[in-house]
Image: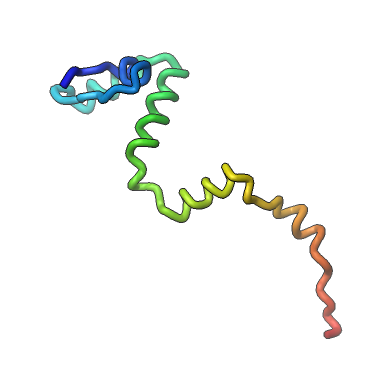
Length: 86
């Protein structure tokens, strides 16, 4: 397998083989990237490995992306007042 740098991973969408690199080396290379490229690498990693994200959170994010959300302040302001006499 061909080893790609972080920039190669992002630019080509290829598979990065970190074999032979220590964690410290990987982090140093990551920190040396320009901000936008660092963001793209982090996003690619999170999209690839999301097993640590609870399913309920992913479902909530999908709801937000699909526009299935309510403005809680507006919803509560528009709700009819409770009738304490009943």
